[in-house]
Image (cartoon, rainbow, N blue to C red; front, side, top):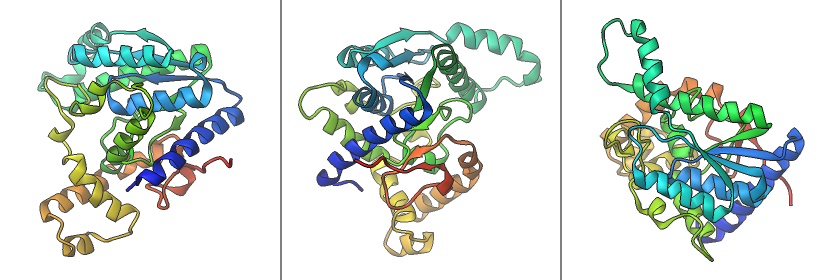
Length: 283
């Protein structure tokens, strides 16, 4: 995991790589979905440092399950960064989608990830609409903990031209947020302190689907960076049920890794297929 001495160098490396990626693509503008959460806040702040505030646009897409606090945090972030932002509520779009697709449910309307993923895919479509119309590359905001566990929706929150923090575990994203705020509060304090949530259903928290990140990330680090087997991790004292759940979810979501955007590499051990990594730009 990151240490204080690492965070500054990784911060600079990501910014250089974003800037280099855009230059090679012949692009100057970026668009980001702003949820009010820490991942999108960190990516937005990094994008502004890499590309300048006039070249970054945030899109807020609240649903019926988005809290007022999350929308307020996203607006505050955009204003702190000085970037343009748009608010496009998705509730009406979602309701119309569900109505038109009613025959596909064949009478079974119980709530599950079908409805949750639809919301994520509506947001992905809106972001890509802006991307196409304004020639802005979409920056993805998924972190390494989520990728490791398959906690993301293909063609929804996993879409984008570049995955900026895909090699940072969630706990490291918090470290990056603290570094970004080292001189002044850019990322709102409430964004950092509130419980992570995809807000795709009433009262949802990440911990509904995943172990707490401070417990999950060390196990993922042992699997990824240290190259440990599940058996070795268990011998070191890790909880058996936790390790089995991690291995099960990783295997079930492995297919998603073949359909992801390029990722900025900052660690010594890649998470997925090496062809997906964008090597850091030189100084």
